Image (cartoon, rainbow, N blue to C red; front, top):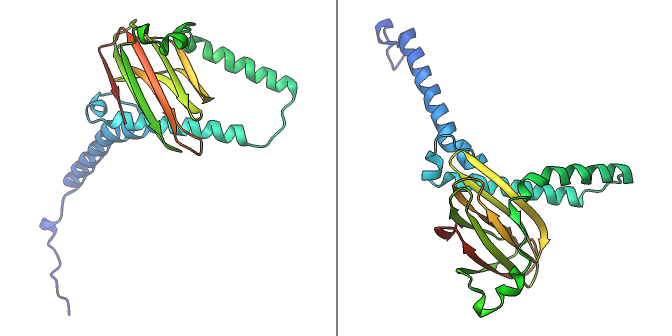
Length: 223
């Protein structure tokens, strides 16, 4: 009546073997969480392996996109706030931005110099962004190093995030929405990659030109 034999008790795994298998599976899942999931989804890389596998960049971009989407949703959400609440919210936001914005100092003559041949810019990076497209450029900098920059958009505006990252570290210096140009001096808070992420939220292509000079060893387009 039966096509298979009932296994003998000796052939069945013991409780010790089952416990060992369960522990091994749990350890493997924890390793995958730390090495793969956290860097790829949240930009958190406690071991540095995610950076080596280029997973942390993916996580950083996902977090930037999530923050940008939340900002767009908040800007378009209907609602009425009183003048008192609006003033309090602006005061809180301004107070929160002071520490990181201090690292991006103004360079008043950067825009005027950007267009002149004798300005002495070290690198120029032209970019074309299609509607909905984003891209990122990073400078490799040592802690305390300074790089002067100026970027301008033709044909529209972009959302941007000036930020830095290194194994186990990340910082956002400045963010903006609907911006056509920016300039300043970027001072690295720690040794690592520091630069910009731009996204075109408009309905037509835009051209972006980034000019940089200063204390960095490498400039590269991340995506």
